[in-house]
Length: 541
Image (cartoon, rainbow, N blue to C red):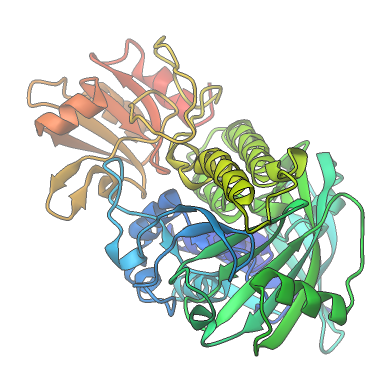
């Protein structure tokens, strides 16, 4: 007889997205069972950028200090340098300060952080498992799902013992990566380009790597040869570990260990001592799931969207999925959601995923642009003609690459314009930004950040439930909204802000902000039908 487990939510996959989802649910008091077929070990970090919006969520969860205290060297410069080889000519450089020297942009209380997955996952695991509501089980594989009208039965396999158990849950969320079992069991196809490049990632250890060259301490080398961009080298931990990526094309290829050593020597430009740690071939893809939901099954993160790492959007997009879905599951499980609230998850997050996938592919095209416009014949010559060619290539490449390094509009500027649980007010919706970000309190947009006092942001008001902001002492009381919310058991608090900066940023006398920090409604007067407003934003129009 198989053992039986019960939880409102089964999360499949204990990577950063699954851990964030389980942690956010627990932070709201919702229990979950999270399973992963692996043991939690990370042999090659797939990500190392924690974006500014993700850091805002970490601020909400109270774990910013944990990220800032991660082992990554905080005084390590983050420059991106374009070279013919590590010891060769420098073609250009995008200067980026070390984490210890970085300042938040004016639009946020946080700045992005460099925290590789082998450091960030343990932080999220520590956060999630700090709650009794989280039951985390490694070495546990999802085998089968049987969906019923009011629950799902999940058959789980203990990979070590071979024993099975059955979990009876209300909802299942697949955070199990590009090869998602949940997505396959749900019958959800993906659309896009299944192979942009076949690439090989190599982690090597070299404690004195910076002493080999004259480029100084930096985060990333992008290496351009006579065939164009062909490799990158990234400082994994700001100390002794480096990730070397050999960027292929759309044709599969198998590299021998001799091939890899030869490529490392070519990329660096000299022979040197290093220790080869791991080699992982992988395929760069451009895919978005056709649906994010099938009945009681949902997908999030790489299970829903697979993108090139150029830009660092993948994990950060996935954590945005988790935060959007968590409060809606909470509302549904606790009985105050309407029947359509969970449907809004796909309506809101799939356009964000599609946009970020496309932007990542655009960044890849810009990084590989020297392949299309091949460097001049004299590019690698130590001659005046060679110097002129390198200056031209460097200037053009540096300008093209700036779009990848400056992406505040991608991380903060997404909006849920067409969401059924957002009430439009007729305002003109400006085009979405990429390199810049203009804060607005438009319905569907992230609520603006304004400092209320030293160390206290408007963003610190949001998270647990809905918040009705009164902007100015003369603003309407919002009593009809509060009464309608109470009648539907929708959690809502009312807060008055009289700071001139906040009044200007929020643009209206009343602004209703959702648990995820996005604006649900705004107006200068009480709504004509407050009950209809509350029913709309909870998915019960």
